[in-house]
Amino acid sequence: MDMSSKLVANQALMKQQNRARVIYTLWKNSPISRTGLAKMTGLNKATITNIILSLQEENMVVHKGSLHGSVGRAQKLLMFNENYGLCAGIMIRAKKINLAISNVHAKILWSTDVPFSAEESPLDVVERVASVLEEGLADCKCYSEKFLGIGVGTASLLRHEDDMLYAIHSIDWRNVPVIQYLRQRFQVPIIADTASNCAALGEKYFGIAENVSDMLYLSVGYGIGGGLFLGGKLYRGKEGFAGDIGHMTLDPNGPQCPCGKRGCWEMMASAIPTGKSFLELRQAADEGDGTAIAELTKIGSNLGKGIANIINVLNPEIIVLGGDVVHAGKWIMTPCRSTLQERVWPWVWERTRVEYSGLSSELGVSTPSIIGAITKVIELLFQ
Image (cartoon, rainbow, N blue to C red; front, side):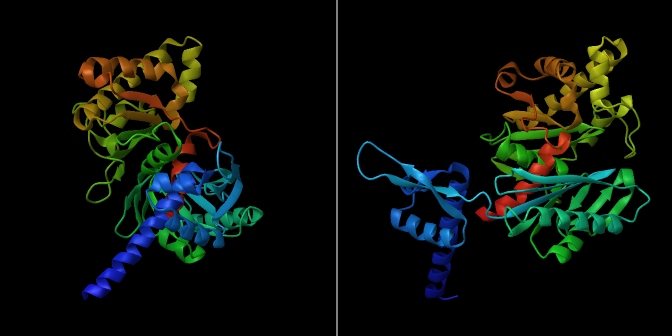
């Protein structure tokens, strides 16, 4: 490539980057004036004006009132059009699949669940899910007819090189081409990730980790999964399997795990050993059931032991606990924090937060994951 071609390519790239910066700033800070946009993005007003004109033609930006200052003319405020397009989220779990459709600010407009049995063919299930999603999109046309894409989260390992569901052990789904099928069916961008990574993304954009660069999201229910942000970026590892944290060994002589090893963290710090949900355990504990209190205390302590190892290695600013464990309340959090206080350096522990997920529960414990799956579509607007 000669120098003139490189210059043209660099200019085109700069225009794309400037556009993405303006879109993100608008999306994050609406309503905002052109002057405010220029200050926040570092771009000059002429560049801002040209980009805004383009976005208005695409119906991505609309006017929203005026800002009246003490001097000069009132400045028109710009608003990212929340109904610019529809985003869909699909969360694949062991017994049911959660579906949701939102606007570009992840406001849920429609949602439902599709139950299925382990005996059904995986592709038959996916075809049924696609048909239900099409019905949902038809119901949401009153908001927008533009369909931006689908974010897919899964409780399985995911091979990012070919977007193949590698395995969902509890229902024996292996090497299922879910993403490829959806891509052919809907002809829109399909972005897939693990449920825990999606949940971490949801917390990063819309939850209590919004302004945090280093955080770990732990989904704790019938198992433990993790999603990790380091330096403000989602960390996946070489093969994309980072976050399969429930199989960290806590006790080499501990209980047998279905994975074949002994003493996996999720066998000692999730609801698996009790055979009950955290909601059932908490209700029993609230009524003074000594067995339930003892079980929750032990789980909370073991959860703290594993988190302490993570804090000592990665030093995140916040650990967010999500999934069914949010129902356990103080019965898990108190022994967990007590164990952390014992096992983490005091000056580190004082600067580390451990909190339950801050996202609403309008979709139950799936809320962070489904919001995160939707967010993967929203992120495409900023690229």
